[in-house]
Length: 80
Length: 213
Image (cartoon, rainbow over all chains, first blue to last red; front, side, top):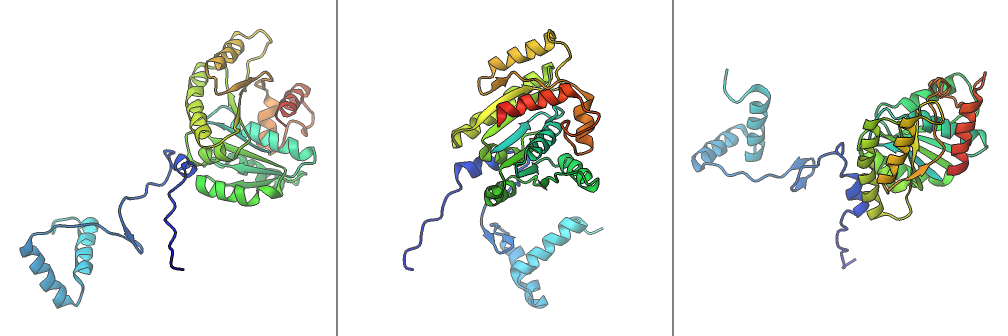
């Protein structure tokens, strides 16, 4: 099929139902699989260090950033 | 017919009325589906007690506190039932809103008390919003837990206050505060089936049913 139909917008009814206070709050932005896409700006010097560490660990840059953020969120930002 | 017993305010006797209505329709031989749209799940519990005790007719009862799920299920299953009674609210919720989209009739019980009368405006605003996205929602307000006595000032004043909320038609068949309703609903039963019966309670419920269905 060569013609792709336009994406349907949520109907007024859907908007009315999801307007209730107990409705699930959906984060804005783009979802990729189970993850949410965000944009991040970073100091070039820090980025060089991240890339170097990622290479050393055999991880991607995104994986390393995710791990670092996870550690910060779960175990505190600063080393105890 | 799909009827929602709903109010954004809690404690107005929605579940008691919904359980009584659903059972009354089943006793009249109709295929009935009672939907509990309240997170507390009181209607569902009452119907489980009914079924554990083996009272007949059994009532099909489902619990959906999520509005989109409630809507999808009713759209799929509604053709199998003659009457669907939805108990929804206590607060503004997706389940209450979905019920407002699906229902032919909204029955809003309220007590003859100031707070209840004030709260009518909240549910009226939701009715307005629902009517802006759909046609044909009939909305009735009914005095529930009405005070005893034909000349009760509070009953009369509360009824008159409905005139200020034009979204609702006032039903002149009040349900009085009677132990029979609460006791019956607590056992998952209707006042029409309990023994010894309360004739006045039965008459009130029957009068309401005659108007609604």
